[in-house]
Image (cartoon, rainbow, N blue to C red; front, side):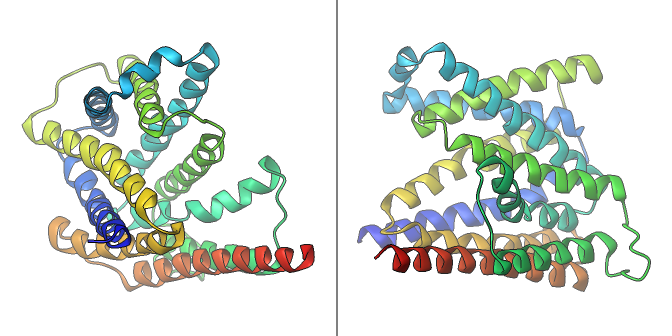
Length: 303
């Protein structure tokens, strides 16, 4: 089997696993609070990455880190998993799974918007059009097509889902500046994030051990959403000839997720959710085309 085929297999496995998370979150939230779900999922991820570092010998890399490296991990851990999953899981608690998961998918567009002030990047008219298209999709999902009065079905939940996209985009902007080994980064991020979550839980709902169903769901989320898929995806990127060859497979995830939500969670999938998702993904693809075209034009000008 050649390397590119292996890359596709790893990427497809990651995509399939990611597609189950919306259903896993919604079902687990029937038995456990959103904060407790995040706490036990994050601690599961810490254990997973610790075991992975021990078996790969990367545990010794911790000795090479300086204080500024730990400060960077603390900041990133505050963004992800703490703030990102805290608001996302609350959104899942308030909204249907199809709505929370799909609205969160706007993050690549938010990433482009935030790159303007934070990375001093300029965007063209095609990128602006892509952003408008994607945000039109979020409005259709949030209002369930009731565009005449622009009334969201749950304004609080919609805002939280969109806020999670902001935190995720911020995480990736600052994450590129962290040059540590990827597995070490993830381990430290989840260590600090788990600490922040623990403090939050103690001072809000109080620490308690959930029942079997809630704990099982949290462990699944910690292993799959916050652990195994990261490793599978990194492996796919490493083996692939180019990032583009595997990155486009991610677009399958939200559509597969809707199918799983329909048959596992039992939600009726609204046509407005599908229409909104198509607009969001269409806007993201158009944005990528705009970036690719822009790079080609710059290359021609530099010749």
